[in-house]
Length: 127
Image (spheres, rainbow, N blue to C red):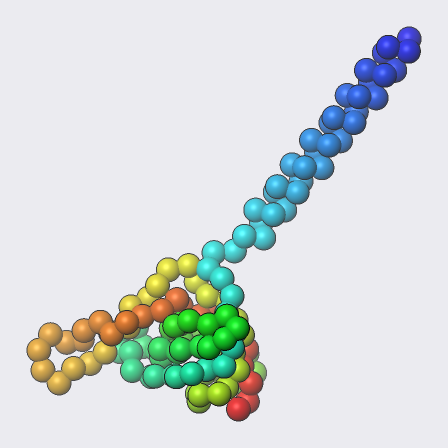
């Protein structure tokens, strides 16, 4: 009788631990969003891209890089799209680099001029 009680208790404990850790794995996988976050001061915003229409945005520290603001594809909160150097931005990006095609006066047009991770949504300061 005692052996059955101990066996049932151990089985219940093992089952509870398995359920707990499998729930954690499912939760942590659900939190893994493609792309990543960024935030910092705008160092340079160049509205030069014609395909796709948008701007190359260079962001400084603490989590910066080169990003693409896509007209019609990036959601801007209350302060609007990136405009001037010194403006603060914070947001999320997509997982793949988008090339920036710029116009040229002669030769093969448009031609690639860098690129960056697409900005999915962002908030920015007024100035």
